[in-house]
Length: 122
Image (tube, rainbow, N blue to C red; front, side, top):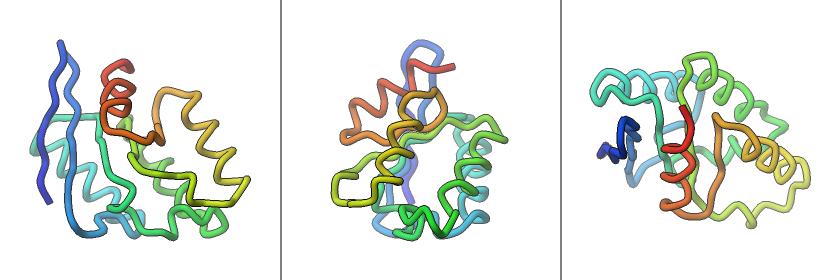
């Protein structure tokens, strides 16, 4: 896992990169948040979709809700970057739409848009 920090004004975003799945359950999400906050002093994280288990995108597993609730509880903003059009689930599309209307969780197609979204929230 490699973490770089993108800084704009007083905003710090941790860009987490890995060739492996980093989040496959709630505990791994908590561990990632703790590492980023401790090592990089960031409360905003950018992740690639490939670093999250596919079960996350199956809403019936409830994994997405459990993990994203932890991010909200710890006041960590997160952007997940990838192609979400590959999923046919209307529920997932609605979930992604609703998340993108808020200011805590973003599902975006490219890194630039994800960085902009994270830097523009407190």
